Each structure stands twice: as structure tokens, then as C-alpha cells.
Amino acid sequence: MTFSRMASALALVSAFLILPVLTQASVVAPGAVSAPDLFTACAGCTLKASLDTGPVTSTNGLLIFDAISAVYSDPGNAFGSGDLDFMYQISNSATSTDAVGRVTAFNFTGSMTDVGFTASGSAEPGVVFVDGSAAPQLVDRSLGGDTVGFSFTSGTPSPLTPGTTSTVLIIETNATNFTAGTVSVIDGGVSTVAAFAPIAPTQTPEPGTILLLGTGLSLLGAARRKWFS
Image (cartoon, helix red, strand yellow):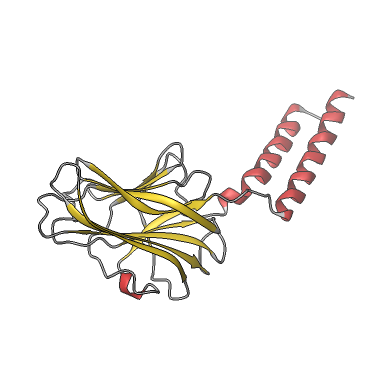
């Protein structure tokens, strides 16, 4: 077998290995920054837990806010029916003297994430949220994967000014269980309050992926025997 044919076999095996990743669209991976997805309200979701924290005064004393966090089981989740969505909404008090620049959620290590928002908060089950108006311009995930962020100051002044409520910020995950987490509101100072976080699932290759990988490795083994015979 020529070297070029062996390289082709290696490329084929690599394609089998990365196929599950390539078929999952709009995923914010560790280290990535992107425009947020625009989600519709999830009428079929089941509310698992919610928490309303506030009013909270920021560490620099310029911001007073409420933070609502919730976890939903989502039949339309991008990673699998019934997987968990983590949602947040921040209300900046009219008595604040500063705008919110950024909101971050922790800890998403080991979980896949699809990140965006919906303006239809009142349509989410459980009457937890309201229809907010301030939407993030960018979303991101830290290089280590633990923190997911929503930026309100990308190229423009923040729309999350005093007296304004954010849209519902959504992180779809491939998790099926959750635990305690945190959400931070940043305006120059950083204020962190209790929220929820996914319990990262154990990643098990799908049967089809295992079959493809086995086939690819068999081809590679055959190529190696011919190469050295």
C-alpha cells in the first residue's frame, strides 16, 4: 500500500471520530465566542427547580438587581429529548446608577452547551420569568469550559440599564441531573449569587459510532499489515 493510501485510511478513521461533533450545530465549545442563538419559549418543558435572589447590591455599590434562575427538562433540547436547560433573568433596579455589562454562569465543566436567549419569558412554564427587553450581543465559554458568559456591551453601550430587565438567558446542555451553581452579575464590580449547574454526564460513544470506529481501525490494521509485508 502506498503512503498516500495509508494517509487516506487515517483520514477516514479521523472522520469517524469527529462525526458526532460535526453533526451537533450551534454548540459553544470551551474557548469559543459567538452570536447567541435565538430560542422560542419551551411550552413543553418541565420546570425542575427555580430560585429568585434579590434584591442584591453589587460590590461597587452602583447596581441593585434581582436574579432569577431555573432548570427545565426540555423535550426539544439540542442534545437530547429531556436534557436540561439552565435559564437566568436579571432585573436591574430603577434605583441603580450603573448598567449590567456581563452575566456569567458556573459550573459547566464536562457538559456540552448551546447558548442563547428568548424574549418570551412569560411563556416559559411555571410563571417564573417575564418578557425582558435587554438581549446579549455575544455569548462565550471559558477555555476551561467551566464558565458560560453573556455580554451586553459588545460594541455598544449596555442595554441592561437601570429599570430594565434582560431577556431570558438560556444554556441548553446534555446533562440530565443538576446541582448547586452560581450566576455572577458584572458591572465593574462582580456580584455572585446562588443558582443551578449541570452534573456532567458520562460520555459514552453511541453504538453506531463504535461500529464505525471498529471498521475504521480494521481498515487501518489491514493497511499497516500490507505496508510492512
